[in-house]
Length: 105
Image 1 (cartoon, helix red, strand yellow):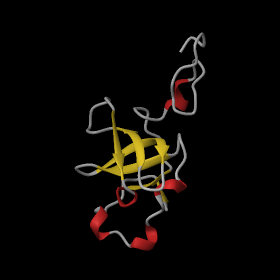
Image 2 (cartoon, rainbow, N blue to C red; image 1 turned 90 degrees about the horizontal axis):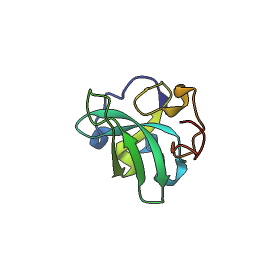
Image 3 (cartoon, one colour; image 1 turned 45 degrees about the vertical axis):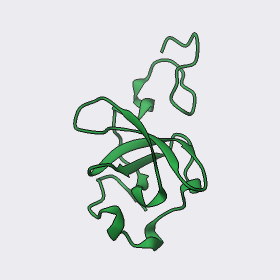
């Protein structure tokens, strides 16, 4: 499942067949995470049990980092400038979004 708008179903009501395994995600994948509502995020790391995500915890432009199990994560296709670093157009970034030394980021 890949969506541009936030899902409308809370994790406990999701169809289990629509839940991708946590280890199917990769660093830099765009996702929605559920934390007091669905929030835009980017995968930092994944394991068989959970994913670590940088996400927008609220309406402001700040970000947070947290760990989520698979039912609380789903793919996202739309852009979110607060968490998607590709739009910056300056500097060079690692897959995790960290600036590469000497890249003017």
